[in-house]
Amino acid sequence: MLSVFVCEDDPHHLECISESIKEYIATEDWDMELFCATTTPYEVLYHLRDGDFDGLYFVDTHLNSNMDGLQLAKEIRQYNPRGFIVFVSADKDSIFLTFKNGLEPMEYILKTSDDMYERINDCIRTAYSRYEINGCSTKLKICQ
Image (cartoon, rainbow, N blue to C red; front, side, top):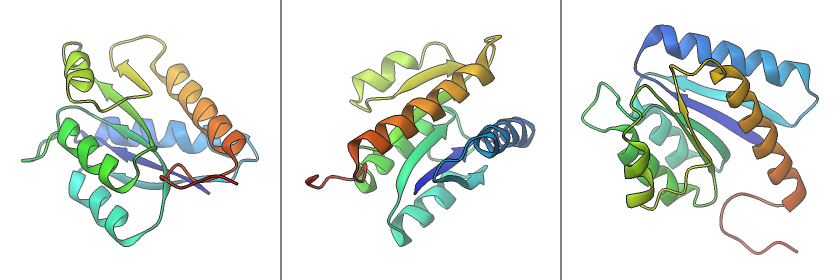
């Protein structure tokens, strides 16, 4: 199963993004779920430490925490090296830091873009397609 995580510090944005994701997933017959929607990066890490996830992660770059979204993405990579990370941010300048830090984001979506939800849906569709085509986990292991 492909598990979707959302980490967004603004409760309103978190709810809007999460509801959009749930609605889109509900329209498809895919083996995926919105597993975690939270305002804190530590909840994401809690689940990753205690679980075995194939993940799609929507992460804000600036979190109201002592850990920002870039640091969270680094931690995600420790647990789920081939997971799909999508940054959803109001900060257009942080995109360069994602590459500088070797985070390999799937997408960087600006919250101010008119097509934000369409792009989120595109990421969901692409991640699931890649997950399904690979026939194996997004974690590092050999596919047979």
